[in-house]
Length: 335
Ligand code: SF4
Image (tube, rainbow, N blue to C red; front, top):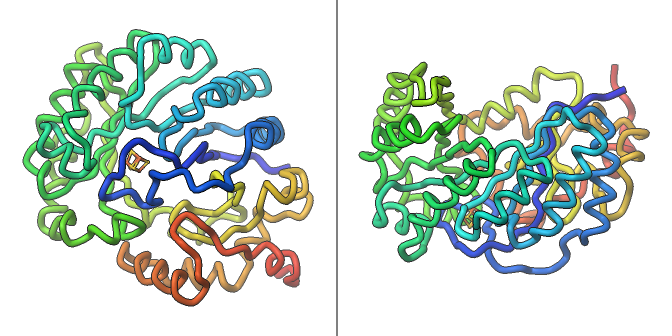
Protein backbone atom coordinates (compact mmCIF):
# COMPACT_ATOMS: atom_id res chain seq x y z
CA UNK A 1 0.00 0.00 0.00
CA UNK A 2 1.33 3.42 -0.94
CA UNK A 3 1.69 6.24 1.54
CA UNK A 4 2.13 9.76 0.30
CA UNK A 5 4.45 12.28 1.83
CA UNK A 6 2.76 15.30 0.31
CA UNK A 7 0.01 16.33 -2.05
CA UNK A 8 -0.36 19.80 -3.48
CA UNK A 9 -3.65 20.73 -5.07
CA UNK A 10 -4.13 23.85 -7.17
CA UNK A 11 -7.62 24.97 -6.19
CA UNK A 12 -7.83 27.50 -9.06
CA UNK A 13 -5.63 29.54 -11.36
CA UNK A 14 -7.75 32.60 -10.90
CA UNK A 15 -5.76 35.30 -9.15
CA UNK A 16 -6.12 38.98 -8.33
CA UNK A 17 -2.46 39.59 -9.16
CA UNK A 18 -0.33 39.12 -12.28
CA UNK A 19 3.08 38.65 -10.72
CA UNK A 20 6.00 38.90 -13.09
CA UNK A 21 7.50 35.66 -11.77
CA UNK A 22 4.34 33.51 -11.69
CA UNK A 23 5.45 30.17 -13.13
CA UNK A 24 1.91 29.00 -13.92
CA UNK A 25 0.79 32.41 -15.25
CA UNK A 26 -2.15 32.60 -12.86
CA UNK A 27 -4.62 35.43 -13.30
CA UNK A 28 -7.55 35.13 -15.65
CA UNK A 29 -10.03 32.35 -15.08
CA UNK A 30 -9.87 30.33 -18.30
CA UNK A 31 -12.47 27.66 -17.46
CA UNK A 32 -12.03 23.89 -17.50
CA UNK A 33 -11.12 23.63 -13.82
CA UNK A 34 -12.41 20.81 -11.61
CA UNK A 35 -15.76 21.62 -10.05
CA UNK A 36 -16.40 21.54 -6.30
CA UNK A 37 -17.78 18.01 -6.16
CA UNK A 38 -14.87 16.66 -8.24
CA UNK A 39 -12.37 18.27 -5.89
CA UNK A 40 -14.15 16.98 -2.78
CA UNK A 41 -14.26 13.48 -4.25
CA UNK A 42 -10.53 13.60 -4.99
CA UNK A 43 -9.76 14.83 -1.48
CA UNK A 44 -12.05 12.20 0.02
CA UNK A 45 -10.13 9.44 -1.80
CA UNK A 46 -6.63 10.83 -1.28
CA UNK A 47 -7.00 11.65 2.39
CA UNK A 48 -7.55 7.98 3.14
CA UNK A 49 -3.94 7.25 2.10
CA UNK A 50 -2.24 8.64 5.21
CA UNK A 51 -0.87 11.69 3.44
CA UNK A 52 1.57 13.51 5.70
CA UNK A 53 0.72 16.96 4.36
CA UNK A 54 -1.68 18.49 1.87
CA UNK A 55 -1.06 21.97 0.47
CA UNK A 56 -3.86 23.98 -1.13
CA UNK A 57 -2.37 26.25 -3.76
CA UNK A 58 -3.24 28.27 -6.85
CA UNK A 59 -3.75 30.94 -8.17
CA UNK A 60 -5.29 32.58 -5.19
CA UNK A 61 -7.27 29.89 -3.32
CA UNK A 62 -9.51 32.55 -1.72
CA UNK A 63 -11.41 32.75 -5.02
CA UNK A 64 -12.92 29.40 -3.96
CA UNK A 65 -13.13 30.15 -0.28
CA UNK A 66 -16.15 27.97 0.59
CA UNK A 67 -14.52 25.05 -1.19
CA UNK A 68 -11.32 25.70 0.72
CA UNK A 69 -13.21 25.36 4.01
CA UNK A 70 -14.96 22.18 2.87
CA UNK A 71 -11.68 20.63 1.71
CA UNK A 72 -9.92 21.40 5.00
CA UNK A 73 -12.83 19.96 7.02
CA UNK A 74 -12.93 16.82 4.91
CA UNK A 75 -9.19 16.21 5.28
CA UNK A 76 -9.37 16.58 9.05
CA UNK A 77 -12.40 14.27 9.20
CA UNK A 78 -10.74 11.52 7.15
CA UNK A 79 -7.20 11.96 8.39
CA UNK A 80 -6.85 14.08 11.55
CA UNK A 81 -3.05 13.77 11.51
CA UNK A 82 -2.61 15.18 8.02
CA UNK A 83 -0.97 18.59 8.13
CA UNK A 84 -2.87 21.15 6.05
CA UNK A 85 -1.20 24.19 4.56
CA UNK A 86 -2.16 26.75 1.97
CA UNK A 87 -0.40 29.36 -0.14
CA UNK A 88 -1.92 32.80 -0.55
CA UNK A 89 -0.91 36.31 -1.54
CA UNK A 90 -2.80 37.52 1.55
CA UNK A 91 -4.62 40.40 -0.10
CA UNK A 92 -8.17 39.07 0.39
CA UNK A 93 -7.74 37.99 4.01
CA UNK A 94 -9.96 39.26 6.83
CA UNK A 95 -10.15 38.42 10.53
CA UNK A 96 -13.31 36.41 9.97
CA UNK A 97 -11.91 34.37 7.09
CA UNK A 98 -8.76 33.55 9.06
CA UNK A 99 -10.89 32.24 11.95
CA UNK A 100 -13.04 30.16 9.61
CA UNK A 101 -9.96 28.57 8.07
CA UNK A 102 -8.45 27.83 11.45
CA UNK A 103 -11.70 26.24 12.66
CA UNK A 104 -11.90 24.19 9.47
CA UNK A 105 -8.52 22.62 10.28
CA UNK A 106 -5.91 24.64 8.38
CA UNK A 107 -2.57 24.43 10.20
CA UNK A 108 -0.30 26.85 8.42
CA UNK A 109 -0.48 29.51 5.73
CA UNK A 110 2.37 30.59 3.49
CA UNK A 111 2.15 34.20 2.38
CA UNK A 112 4.28 35.58 -0.41
CA UNK A 113 6.39 38.57 0.53
CA UNK A 114 8.42 39.45 -2.51
CA UNK A 115 9.45 42.86 -1.32
CA UNK A 116 9.69 44.76 1.92
CA UNK A 117 8.81 48.19 0.53
CA UNK A 118 5.91 49.20 -1.68
CA UNK A 119 8.36 49.81 -4.49
CA UNK A 120 9.97 46.37 -4.43
CA UNK A 121 6.72 44.51 -3.73
CA UNK A 122 4.66 46.26 -6.42
CA UNK A 123 7.51 45.95 -8.91
CA UNK A 124 7.29 42.16 -9.01
CA UNK A 125 3.61 41.74 -8.08
CA UNK A 126 2.39 44.37 -10.58
CA UNK A 127 0.16 45.72 -7.80
CA UNK A 128 -0.40 49.18 -6.36
CA UNK A 129 0.22 49.67 -2.65
CA UNK A 130 -0.89 46.17 -1.59
CA UNK A 131 2.02 45.33 0.70
CA UNK A 132 0.19 46.51 3.85
CA UNK A 133 -2.52 43.94 3.10
CA UNK A 134 0.05 41.16 3.49
CA UNK A 135 1.09 42.48 6.90
CA UNK A 136 -2.61 42.65 7.89
CA UNK A 137 -3.13 39.07 6.69
CA UNK A 138 -0.20 37.84 8.78
CA UNK A 139 -1.82 39.35 11.87
CA UNK A 140 -5.28 37.96 11.06
CA UNK A 141 -3.83 34.49 10.56
CA UNK A 142 -1.76 34.53 13.74
CA UNK A 143 -4.65 35.93 15.80
CA UNK A 144 -6.72 32.99 14.55
CA UNK A 145 -4.08 30.56 15.78
CA UNK A 146 -2.52 29.71 12.42
CA UNK A 147 1.21 29.37 11.94
CA UNK A 148 2.59 31.67 9.25
CA UNK A 149 5.39 31.00 6.78
CA UNK A 150 6.73 33.61 4.38
CA UNK A 151 8.12 32.88 0.95
CA UNK A 152 10.04 35.32 -1.13
CA UNK A 153 11.60 35.54 -4.55
CA UNK A 154 14.97 37.28 -4.47
CA UNK A 155 15.05 39.78 -7.34
CA UNK A 156 16.75 42.99 -8.41
CA UNK A 157 14.67 45.31 -6.22
CA UNK A 158 14.45 43.35 -2.97
CA UNK A 159 18.01 42.08 -3.01
CA UNK A 160 19.05 44.56 -0.32
CA UNK A 161 16.01 43.92 1.89
CA UNK A 162 16.52 40.28 2.74
CA UNK A 163 18.05 40.92 6.17
CA UNK A 164 15.14 43.26 6.99
CA UNK A 165 12.68 40.52 6.02
CA UNK A 166 14.43 38.08 8.33
CA UNK A 167 14.35 40.60 11.19
CA UNK A 168 10.61 40.99 10.53
CA UNK A 169 10.19 37.20 10.77
CA UNK A 170 12.07 37.13 14.07
CA UNK A 171 10.02 39.97 15.54
CA UNK A 172 6.72 38.54 14.34
CA UNK A 173 7.12 34.85 15.22
CA UNK A 174 7.04 33.60 11.65
CA UNK A 175 7.71 29.85 11.64
CA UNK A 176 9.59 29.65 8.34
CA UNK A 177 11.21 32.01 5.84
CA UNK A 178 11.76 30.47 2.45
CA UNK A 179 13.46 31.83 -0.65
CA UNK A 180 13.47 30.24 -4.05
CA UNK A 181 15.26 31.25 -7.25
CA UNK A 182 13.31 32.59 -10.20
CA UNK A 183 11.84 29.81 -12.33
CA UNK A 184 12.11 30.44 -16.08
CA UNK A 185 8.57 29.21 -16.64
CA UNK A 186 5.34 31.07 -17.47
CA UNK A 187 5.64 34.78 -16.71
CA UNK A 188 8.91 34.00 -14.93
CA UNK A 189 10.29 33.14 -18.36
CA UNK A 190 8.88 36.26 -20.04
CA UNK A 191 10.36 38.52 -17.34
CA UNK A 192 13.50 36.55 -16.65
CA UNK A 193 16.07 39.18 -17.63
CA UNK A 194 14.32 41.93 -15.72
CA UNK A 195 14.12 39.94 -12.49
CA UNK A 196 16.89 37.41 -12.35
CA UNK A 197 19.90 37.87 -10.08
CA UNK A 198 23.44 37.05 -11.16
CA UNK A 199 25.16 33.94 -9.82
CA UNK A 200 27.17 36.01 -7.36
CA UNK A 201 24.03 37.77 -6.14
CA UNK A 202 22.36 34.39 -5.61
CA UNK A 203 25.42 33.31 -3.63
CA UNK A 204 25.10 36.42 -1.46
CA UNK A 205 21.43 35.59 -0.82
CA UNK A 206 22.34 32.09 0.25
CA UNK A 207 25.09 33.44 2.45
CA UNK A 208 22.64 35.81 4.23
CA UNK A 209 20.26 32.89 4.78
CA UNK A 210 23.07 30.75 6.13
CA UNK A 211 24.27 33.47 8.51
CA UNK A 212 20.79 33.73 10.00
CA UNK A 213 20.20 30.01 10.34
CA UNK A 214 19.39 28.93 13.88
CA UNK A 215 18.04 32.29 15.06
CA UNK A 216 15.14 32.27 17.46
CA UNK A 217 11.96 34.27 17.09
CA UNK A 218 10.71 36.42 19.98
CA UNK A 219 8.41 33.60 21.07
CA UNK A 220 11.45 31.36 21.55
CA UNK A 221 11.03 29.07 18.52
CA UNK A 222 13.71 28.62 15.91
CA UNK A 223 12.96 30.41 12.64
CA UNK A 224 13.31 27.79 9.94
CA UNK A 225 15.17 29.28 6.99
CA UNK A 226 15.02 27.46 3.68
CA UNK A 227 16.60 27.89 0.28
CA UNK A 228 14.19 26.02 -1.96
CA UNK A 229 16.17 24.68 -4.87
CA UNK A 230 13.57 23.49 -7.41
CA UNK A 231 16.09 21.11 -8.94
CA UNK A 232 15.95 19.03 -5.76
CA UNK A 233 12.64 17.64 -7.04
CA UNK A 234 14.38 16.09 -10.00
CA UNK A 235 17.38 14.73 -8.11
CA UNK A 236 15.03 13.17 -5.55
CA UNK A 237 12.98 11.49 -8.29
CA UNK A 238 16.09 9.61 -9.43
CA UNK A 239 16.34 8.00 -6.01
CA UNK A 240 12.84 6.97 -5.01
CA UNK A 241 10.97 3.73 -5.88
CA UNK A 242 7.69 5.52 -6.45
CA UNK A 243 6.32 9.04 -6.50
CA UNK A 244 5.30 9.95 -2.99
CA UNK A 245 4.73 13.65 -3.61
CA UNK A 246 1.84 14.37 -5.93
CA UNK A 247 0.92 17.62 -7.63
CA UNK A 248 -2.65 18.00 -8.84
CA UNK A 249 -3.50 20.82 -11.19
CA UNK A 250 -6.82 22.68 -11.16
CA UNK A 251 -7.64 20.65 -14.30
CA UNK A 252 -7.18 17.35 -12.47
CA UNK A 253 -3.79 16.44 -13.93
CA UNK A 254 -1.47 14.60 -11.56
CA UNK A 255 2.09 15.59 -12.34
CA UNK A 256 5.26 14.40 -10.69
CA UNK A 257 6.47 17.95 -10.27
CA UNK A 258 4.75 21.32 -10.68
CA UNK A 259 7.64 22.14 -13.03
CA UNK A 260 7.34 19.06 -15.21
CA UNK A 261 4.28 19.28 -17.46
CA UNK A 262 3.58 15.57 -17.89
CA UNK A 263 0.15 14.42 -16.79
CA UNK A 264 0.60 10.89 -15.47
CA UNK A 265 -3.11 10.63 -14.62
CA UNK A 266 -6.12 12.87 -14.91
CA UNK A 267 -8.62 12.92 -12.08
CA UNK A 268 -11.41 14.54 -14.09
CA UNK A 269 -11.37 11.49 -16.39
CA UNK A 270 -10.53 8.74 -13.93
CA UNK A 271 -10.46 8.07 -10.21
CA UNK A 272 -7.67 8.16 -7.69
CA UNK A 273 -8.48 4.52 -6.92
CA UNK A 274 -7.58 3.53 -10.50
CA UNK A 275 -4.41 5.64 -10.28
CA UNK A 276 -3.45 3.35 -7.39
CA UNK A 277 -4.78 0.10 -8.93
CA UNK A 278 -2.73 0.74 -12.07
CA UNK A 279 0.37 1.35 -9.93
CA UNK A 280 0.99 4.66 -11.63
CA UNK A 281 3.16 6.10 -8.79
CA UNK A 282 5.90 3.57 -9.60
CA UNK A 283 5.21 2.93 -13.29
CA UNK A 284 5.48 6.66 -14.09
CA UNK A 285 9.11 6.57 -12.98
CA UNK A 286 9.79 3.74 -15.45
CA UNK A 287 8.45 5.70 -18.40
CA UNK A 288 11.24 6.43 -20.87
CA UNK A 289 10.09 9.98 -21.54
CA UNK A 290 9.98 10.74 -17.81
CA UNK A 291 13.37 9.12 -17.20
CA UNK A 292 15.00 11.03 -20.03
CA UNK A 293 13.52 14.35 -18.93
CA UNK A 294 14.50 13.88 -15.29
CA UNK A 295 18.05 13.00 -16.35
CA UNK A 296 18.27 16.13 -18.51
CA UNK A 297 17.29 18.47 -15.68
CA UNK A 298 20.52 19.77 -14.17
CA UNK A 299 19.87 23.53 -13.82
CA UNK A 300 16.82 25.80 -13.85
CA UNK A 301 17.76 26.82 -17.40
CA UNK A 302 17.06 23.24 -18.50
CA UNK A 303 13.50 23.82 -17.33
CA UNK A 304 13.18 26.76 -19.70
CA UNK A 305 14.49 24.66 -22.59
CA UNK A 306 12.01 21.89 -21.79
CA UNK A 307 9.15 24.35 -21.42
CA UNK A 308 9.87 25.94 -24.82
CA UNK A 309 10.10 22.48 -26.38
CA UNK A 310 6.74 21.50 -24.90
CA UNK A 311 5.17 24.73 -26.15
CA UNK A 312 6.53 24.29 -29.66
CA UNK A 313 6.48 20.56 -30.29
CA UNK A 314 3.58 19.39 -28.16
CA UNK A 315 1.59 22.63 -28.37
CA UNK A 316 1.20 22.62 -24.58
CA UNK A 317 0.48 26.02 -23.10
CA UNK A 318 1.71 27.12 -19.70
CA UNK A 319 -0.90 25.71 -17.31
CA UNK A 320 -1.49 22.54 -19.32
CA UNK A 321 0.26 19.17 -19.12
CA UNK A 322 0.94 16.55 -21.76
CA UNK A 323 -1.13 13.40 -21.10
CA UNK A 324 1.29 10.45 -20.95
CA UNK A 325 -0.97 8.17 -18.88
CA UNK A 326 -1.64 5.80 -21.80
CA UNK A 327 2.09 5.52 -22.49
CA UNK A 328 2.64 4.61 -18.85
CA UNK A 329 -0.06 1.97 -18.77
CA UNK A 330 0.96 0.54 -22.13
CA UNK A 331 4.57 0.09 -21.22
CA UNK A 332 6.02 -3.18 -20.10
CA UNK A 333 6.93 -3.20 -16.44
CA UNK A 334 10.67 -3.19 -15.93
CA UNK A 335 12.41 -4.94 -13.04
S1 SF4 B 1 2.57 34.30 -8.00
FE1 SF4 B 1 0.80 33.85 -6.70
S2 SF4 B 1 -0.14 35.83 -6.32
FE2 SF4 B 1 1.20 36.09 -8.07
S3 SF4 B 1 -0.08 35.77 -9.91
FE3 SF4 B 1 0.87 33.80 -9.38
S4 SF4 B 1 -0.61 32.78 -8.06
FE4 SF4 B 1 -1.16 34.97 -8.12
